[in-house]
Amino acid sequence: MTVDNPFAEIVLSGQLLLAIPVALLAGLVSFASPCVLPLVPGYLGYVGGISEAGRAAGSASGADEKAARRAGRRRMLLGIALFILGFSLIFLAYSAVFGALGFWLIQWQDTITRIMGAVVIVLGLVFIGQFSFLQRTFKPSWRPATGLIGAPVLGIVFGLGWTPCIGPTLSAIQALSLTSGSAWSGVLLGLFYCIGLGVPFLLVALGFEWVAGSVAFLKRHIRTINIIGGALLVLIGILMVSGLWTIWVYQLQAVITGYVTPV
View (cartoon, rainbow, N blue to C red):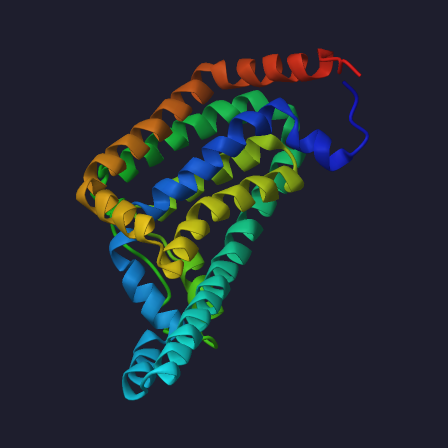
């Protein structure tokens, strides 16, 4: 199979076929972690101005109340979208830098993959709760204004900080970006991480009943999710250190290159 589109070639590379699902899952696990999930209502209120919208709806009646609630919902959705945009800009920039750095280190790719695998193992243990000095939260001390104006700024602050839940999963994606050897590959991995982390925020803001039930389930099993997420990171790190990750990448590339379409 020959692919003329260079972007499609990047997507269909063996490296990304393995790494994209990992990035998406890492984003979902980050959202379901104890550093993010319990704070979701606070984020919604901060960026959407729920308190102001609630007061406006409470002082209205009938059709005016419904209109006020719809306006509040739209405001909250826009605020969450801007919040996601803020942290996505930071995470995509990280991924692009690591991917570009990997391009210059491509000749040592196998060694770097093994070293990064060891780092991912440590990060998985941090996610589970080990290494107390990395269990602290570091973030800029300044706080942006509430509402739509401050929403993207809050997203940037969220992206710049370190938490024992977001930090390890994001750093693991940066390790995969580094071994991909391409800035575009790094951006793509960062994008799927942001999708995994950001889409649940939007679903919660939309207020679907099944989402509320899912969030309640995640809260009840939040420690189990942490352990499973950390264990998956450790497993990926072991695959990278052992060389199995690289072998699988080459095997996938061989399958993709040798595939011939029936038409």
